[in-house]
Image: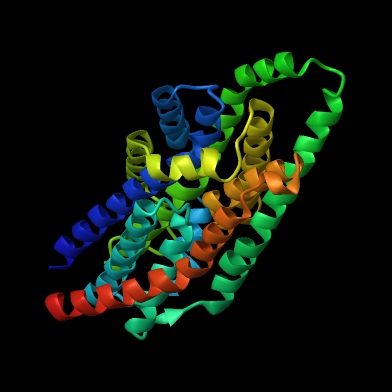
Length: 332
């Protein structure tokens, strides 16, 4: 029974990873596609490949998710807790994808773990949630906004005497590099979250020690699932990020991607913090747009996005709690 549950949880985790990929594909390619630096399919292929590579560059975020958020009970009961968390995160991803809102898959997963654990009366590491999730959730968008604006100001100053048309054309050739960088950061951040959940399920099921390293097959499977999801594309969210927040040109697209990828690398490698690729990229776009003029950013759209951010953790927690109760009734 427990073996069947573990296999089921791993499958659901990889489904979440796939939805994470197509939900967050816009993070990596929306700016490059909207500025016509890349065609949609080439951009998606580039993002999928860089996602796969990025997933192999570290496990610090996976360790945070697997060990630092909740203590799931051992055995079948703990596996039901993890399954409930994943189902809640998947449902919230699909809801926000349907409405074209670039919410955070990362925070949906964290909210799912917390909600399912609370419903099961399991231990939640609130200090870990605050230090590794809530604080980075607040700080990373602010840094993304400020760094995006700063990079754009530097670009404007460096190229202040250049021909605008020629400069824009030059950045169109450079922008695939920054798109690859943000896709690499997406793999480094988001694939690791699924690795952490699979690792947690293996520990709960008694198939691996909590002190063990994450197995290579878990890393490869998570990398493949998010890459396939990314290649499937998330066109609804892509429209929001690429055009509805602000109309981007190649220099601004490059600035936003360069700023966001820097924040992702620093958080993952330096702090092991599971920050939101979506939040960071979206606020970087806003910061870049604000250098043009404040009215260039469609703040009404931005407000809707921020509302979705605020709701993500509690909403995913509620859905996950209900999913846990349903699974508990069926399985146990």
